[in-house]
Amino acid sequence: MREDELHHVLQAAANLTGEDQFVVIGSQALVWQVPGVPDELVTSMEVDIYPRDAPELADEIDGNLGEGSRFHETYGYWAHGVGPETPVAPAGWELRLVPIVLPRFKHEDSYLTAHLLEAHDLVLAKLAAGRDRDLSYAITAVSADIVSLEELERRLELIPDSHRNRVRDLLAVVRARAKQP
Image 1: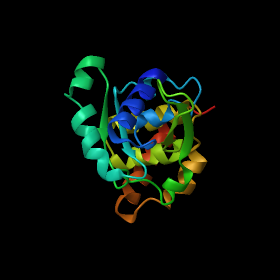
Image 2: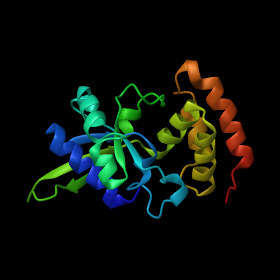
Image 3: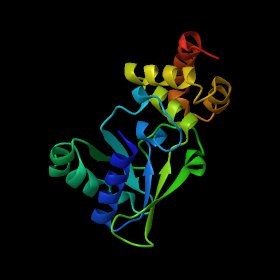
Image 4: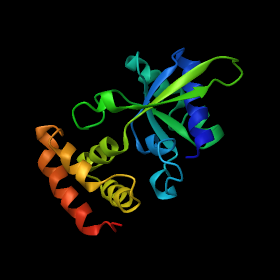
């Protein structure tokens, strides 16, 4: 997903919900965090978001801007309404969100803010999900020097107990397979 597409999704979510603060927790969280982010890390045409101050509106986003919606059929990308309980991320992840302020379309002096899941927290949340594509994502993020193995290992202890062993095992695979500078 390109920056303009992500901006469009956030604008549509703001227009729909009346909110102006959104949390982006999926792979698209890297779009504005990492200049020149490798394409393979942001290929998804879906953005996982929820209104920061009204997460209960995520269902409204999913229903109106989600997969199979008119928005999706028109533009080819969509929003997946999620909630703060969705990511299995290191404790404190909400305090490490990276805020990006964006202008509102057709609204002078009006802005919206995307609060992006920080890159290390994102990679660990993907490893907690444990899908093959998430392992590949983590390997690419380390190989591209977007995240450091040392910081991932530091935050490993902040992963919920229920997922820590799986994440530890997958992190060992990342260490073995990543091309490190």
